[in-house]
Length: 258
Image (tube, rainbow, N blue to C red):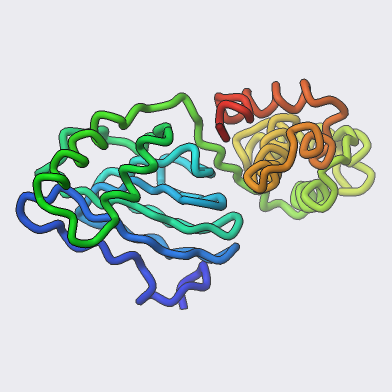
């Protein structure tokens, strides 16, 4: 069994499309917490879910993707794909020789209603070649990047900083300062600050903020209100949560999930 708990034969099948066909669309139900182990393929992939919240990890970042956005994954890019909440992945796999898009890095794109319907249309079996070619051309025209950032979050390995990190994950509303945490962790505030910066690449405050935003994503994907999610993950006001979300993701919750 690979590290994410999925058998190796469950990796996505994405055979090269036949001649004159630019892409194929594959669908995969993903229970919450399930993963396709790290893999790569000779086709480009547009990682998208019709419902739930998809997670993609690649060398250049980590992305959480509700149905409003998708991730363009260039051919031969190692990546792992999973479900942060129960999801149905419906991904076009695109032959590079037939593709006008040549983005060299994973790129987040918007999925407006027309693009959503085109993907579903192209998933239908027996689509006549002329109709398929027209739909494929429109699909490529609709691929528009959005300024969504990756939200990778590294965890500290030092036991003292790890104690703080695990406690924060258990209680997202805990707002204690590092000086207060020092008595729990057995290390000074300065030492804890150094450990978080060195081992996660983020200062303590930014690390806690990113953790809260990550934990908020599945709740927002379920359709819960921004106000209720803000309080659930530790923010006293909705405006403070929206500002933190925008700093982390690059978009407001409304823009990202709309």
